[in-house]
Amino acid sequence: MINTYYPIGASLDKNGQCTFSVWAPMCSSVSVVLDASPEVTWPMEKREAGYWCVKVDHVTPGMQYRYKLDNELLRPDPASRWQPEGVHGPSAVVDTNFSWTDSAWQGIELADMIIYELHTGTFTPEGNFQGIISKLDYLQSLGITAIEILPIAQFPGHHNWGYDGVYPFAIQNTYGTAEDLKRLVNEAHHRGIAVILDVVYNHAGPEGNYLPDFAPYFTDKYKLYWGQSVNFDSAWCDGVRNYVIQNALLWLDEFHIDALRLDAVHAIFDSSALHIMEELTQQVRLLEQRTKKRKILIAEFDLNNPRYITPVEQGGFGMDAQWVDEFHHALHAVITGEQSGYYEDFGGLDLLARSLQTSYVYTGQYSKHRKRHFGKEPLNTLYNQCIAFVQNHDQVGNRLLGDRISTLLSPEALKLAAAALLLSPHVPLLFMGEEYGEKNPFQFFTSHSDPELIKNLVEGRRKEFAAFNWEGEVPNPQDEAVFNQSKLSWKLNEVPGLFDFYQHLIAFRKKRPALRNFRRNDAVRNITVQNNILHFERHGHYDVLTVCLNFGAAPQSVQLEQSCLKIFDSSDKKWEGPGSQAPEVVQPAQSFSMNPYSAVVFEQTNSNQ
Image (cartoon, rainbow, N blue to C red; front, top):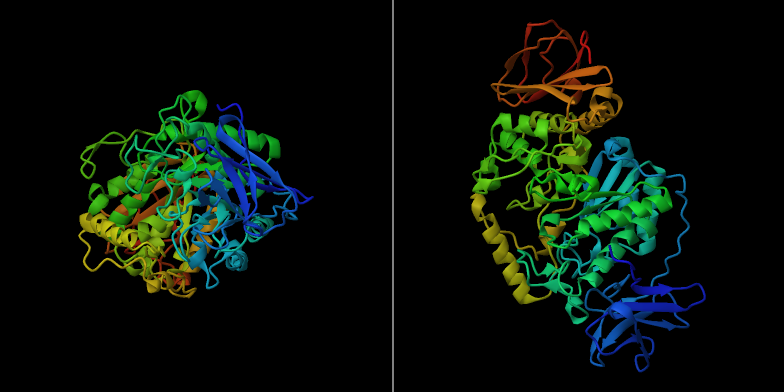
């Protein structure tokens, strides 16, 4: 572990004195230039490990500045807290004071999370943090307990998914201010909603990335698909590691964020004895101890490697949870019939059953798509360490047209997909608009200004889609219409009955003890696949539920071994379905019929735990 973590950026005191700190170990001189008086420079003192520092009096919030490197280059602050004129403009000093009223909030555990992923720019017509605040009551009524916000680091232009950010400490200037984000977190906590922030530590965007002018932030030691690899293990990597850890702690501490979702950790290469993910986890645990509030780290990756969520004492990195893409892949392939691209590894109902049992589908078997044996069983982990979904920004936005599953499936199949997710033992994540069947696409959009970059971007998208055999032209991500049509319509009756069904299932998940057990050895039992029927039992605290899912386009006959009482059927008329065929009471070995694309849940009446 690094012995000392150095503060970076511009820190403003109440008396108007501002401390500027920047890491530039290769520079022979660094000075601060205030835009208010550009003819005056403030030489900085070089300290240990390549950090430069100076204190400047009479600084006010909003004052703009740059760093002058070696008396030549004028550059924004790598740890800028605000870029009012975008990625190429000066940095600005920020007042960090805020009147928090969430002192009673202690955070929530993963087991209690119903996550709702959203993109700030397309979630509401306003496209900003205030727009999200205006929908918090709606999300609370749905039953959401955590919102996950796609990256908000300053990116080029007006609109972007957020993964082209180049100032990880600065909030995208079109979304609002630091105060606006704090107000959002504060309001969410008052409604019992945690806030998860998506952060990107595996690469930086290509436009406005001035980090190499300051220090060796990147390395050619590893090859990365979307840009240079971040330097976590070569010469001068200590400053890079400090940069990332300071950023993570900023959101979790100053902004009261409850969890970070770390983008594509499989693209974070680190051969150090202390992996950067383990070091980050250590620092977050210390923050938890100091603040007495729960802070969670979620890894996004698709390598089916439980090491990231395995405790440190067992040789892991100690992170709290991970995304599970293979639940999505297995469900999507079964319910849509698609089997191109990475879906070629899926399609059988037995593979969805395997995901329900082991979270990963591939735990060492041969993968046709990857052309190798792949994965490892996640032993000694809990189901609530795995986050599953029917849709997310990647799985929708990385389709050729950004088409949502609501445009591919019938209303009954949409309810079946919702049931498969919310009755699974994993932590569920909904993608914005999924709960009412949003039909507007969520496409990939950017607003770069570099013509060569734009050309390469469009060509890269075309190559990426080749394996899926999708027909049609690749939409130009720079087209303003692509961004605008990706905004939610908020037609809450888009698919009649769907919102009510989601609301009911979420409430049901919260109250049933059988759905609150996340132990791998007994939470899910007796998984069986018969023709197009997948049925399994959920056990917990003397509560036993039998879940029957019909993925067929025709009615199916089912027999259960235990006597059961029907709790609900997704085809009930109260959710605009055709009406349930299943009886209210089922006796052992009694056959009954299930509607096409339906989910029926029974309560066992004579079983023991």
